[in-house]
Length: 434
Ligand code: ADP
Image 1: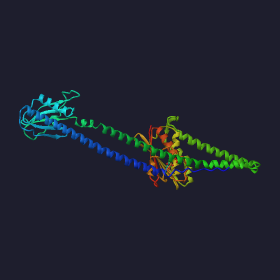
Image 2: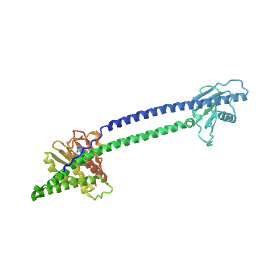
Image 3: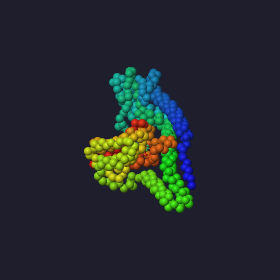
Image 4: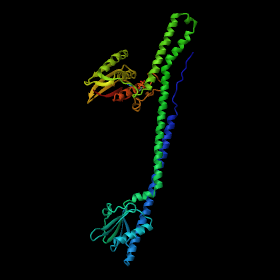
């Protein structure tokens, strides 16, 4: 029996397609936004001009009417727009307020203006507004604070009718409901597009991680399965069957490899389905320095074999935490394992502890290959491994740091990494000291 494994490669075209989709989306959305902005401002300008003209016509209608009533033969000196919502018309005499209000309402009705307005009569002799009132068609608010008085500034002599629209912008916007709706729809489209693109990028990353994981899995399982296959093939040969010693040898190989396979699959399944809420952490008072010392003792052999060095600088005086001994030891072990795995030359590892306020800081530093900036935020994710192309010189499933982070967080701690390619890495854990 020959076992063949197929290497799964990540499809190479996807990245370009995604870049094109994002670029097209950005170009088309920004054109739509620019177009919308242009048309909305044009429509606003148009509505405003219409409103201003209607007000000016109404006000000159009022002045003409007053002249007519007073049998004054002089002509109006025109209506001026003094500010966005403030209009004024020159008059020869001060009309009675009631008459002025009636005339204004009449003219506004004729010109289709139904907005709240404030009117006043200004006398230059006193340099102040003699009389002012707000006319609110919707909510009768006679005591509302008048704004017209602060708006009125006159430089010429004579009497003026002053007119102010406190809600002019809202009034214009009310005529632009179509544009308001279409702008809201465009905003929704942009949110939707951003969401879809985000989803696309996540999917892409997920498929990359999946392809990587399957490649790793294939790689890791290949050796024991082939060995079992070859041994099983050998078992059916008569020469082996007749030689109990060789037979026993092959049976042992199959047994051992099967054990290895089982423990690997178990480990992957255990960590992949790790849910901190369901793990039964057995919390007890632990000495962080002591746990590190013990882990380091076990680890020394591996480092020595490679001619490396493992130094401890355990300076934390308050080193007690409330934690799970087994899981916490695994955390230190995993970090040491990575520090050694990802060092091409003799690993030089340093573990230090120190107190920072009420916390204890644990730092595992190595002189290994380091990690590129673009991968730093991903390495704690499940199954994530820094891509190495097809070279599988370092074994792993991308689960170690996910496990470390999950356990640290379950201990209400934090973990971060500082690293640069070729400059080694430092993993820093912060925990609450007891
Ligand atoms: P594994 O080691 O099984 O791949 P981990 O979750 O422990 O999974 O690590 C995720 C990835 O982070 C690794 O594939 C490796 O690329 C990177 N990494 C982790 N620790 C180190 C380290 N000390 N130095 C360099 N790279 C590291």
